[in-house]
Image 1 (cartoon, rainbow, N blue to C red):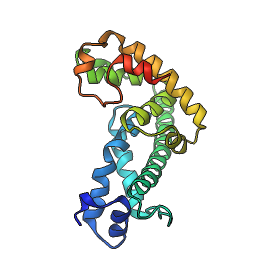
Image 2 (image 1 turned 90 degrees about the vertical axis):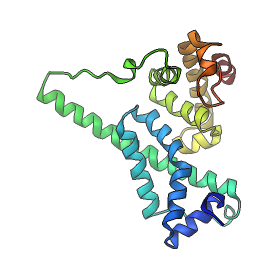
Image 3 (image 1 turned 180 degrees about the vertical axis):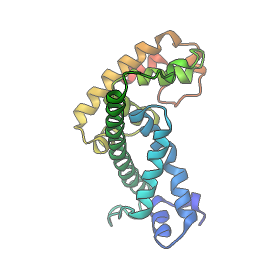
Image 4 (image 1 turned 120 degrees about the vertical axis):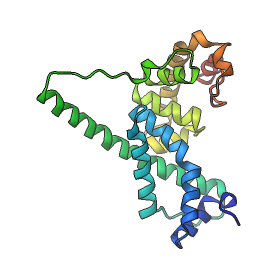
Length: 214
């Protein structure tokens, strides 16, 4: 059976037996979702890619062991592995944020000069994907994280709660508030460029965003 047709559990088993191609298949399968999660927590910088690479290094060194009641069920195998990867990634992002805060404090103590940063504000407003990214970046980290997991990766409330360590009710509240704020931010694009943009199906138009928050 070729790697693309194998379940996550089968790929983990193959990797434990020394199959490099099996591990490459796991990376290809989960990399994009992890990068979106990292960017939700760290912003759109190279730090997100570094954290994702470290996450896969942890997977290579100490992969999770799937319980017997999970093995053989591809959907359950993927859910367990994805949850494990996202939790590892989240912890790494928290460490990165703490390190970045310490670095900034040291720089501020050494000099009063503050370097300006272009960030996502330099992206042209006509780029609707960039507009969505800018809208997300204006939200709190808590709201941004759950929205990325919900809209882009289509995680359930329970899965998001397991990944973030929050209660399901808190996850629902963050998604509702974040949806409303994002919809207001993107309101000028409703029915025009936003509908034609290459965005995840879960986002669609601003109207669908507002409906999803209910």
